[in-house]
Image (cartoon, rainbow, N blue to C red; front, top):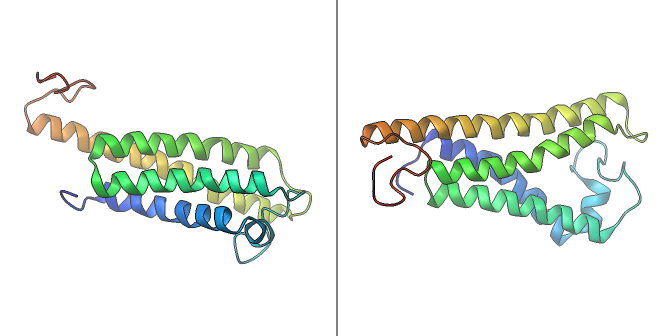
Length: 159
């Protein structure tokens, strides 16, 4: 890591819960189904029946998005963080849309709304990180005398 930037810190903060959720679902799918998020109502169990394959696969998606996002925040630059944030956005957007349009009959309305708000915050976080990295990339391109376009410097020429 060249330097600790706000985008790296923010991206890591988005990544860590994804990693923890993913690890829990992959390593203990039944526990994840029965107990997630660990306090309050069991959100996953509110969508029966239990399916260990589906639970493990969903956990793998959380693990992959969190691992990739954390990895680029530690070892890569703004452009790579932006690409990983787009991937995170592509993961979170269908997730929030599903919960927003499929309230659970096993949860009270307030819990359903809170769930959508919290997942919506992940979408907002992804968009925020994309914007943060876009600004960082443009300012880096200007300071280096390049246009900062998508292929700037790829072939050895300035953008």
